[in-house]
Image 1 (spheres, one colour):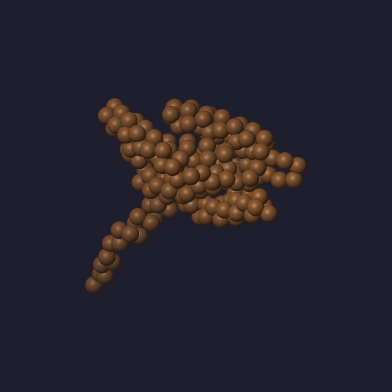
Image 2 (spheres, rainbow, N blue to C red; image 1 turned 45 degrees about the vertical axis):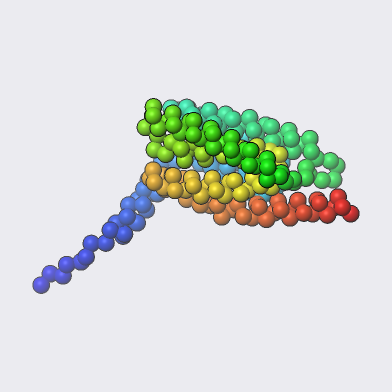
Length: 219
């Protein structure tokens, strides 16, 4: 008698995901690989408050600008133009904040400022999300808008060395994982998983730096 092996949809799904990951990995161009490597190195250096993180951010965003233009993803390309400008701005701010013995100090902003920023983001999300849902075939118009505007604000906070930026990035990256995974971009989703695991170390490092600077001022 033939033994009928029960169908296992979970195993099929895992196999499909594995095959998709392999295809995406081999589909990476050298330029995209460099952009990803620079993005990871940027985060590592930013965690250590190393000003050279902005150079790597500039390289990564410049490559992504070109890649998205070539793919006709014009809004994503425009966003990376903004990130490139923020890389220049961040370099200048961190450089100006240095003295002979110390890097620019980490700071913190009051809850009121973050409340105003979140309210402004909510208004922008409602506006752009409504337009995208009405006039485009965007998969997640409101969620995508929220992560985009929040990322712009969080990048500005990094440039100003505000410790709360890490909390924004934690939420943004967790949401991005689910967005990319649902769109079958498993490799990009896994990259953001790496970011999520790195973020707490950045938060701890910057918090320690902020408290150390505060004690030095008191002393």
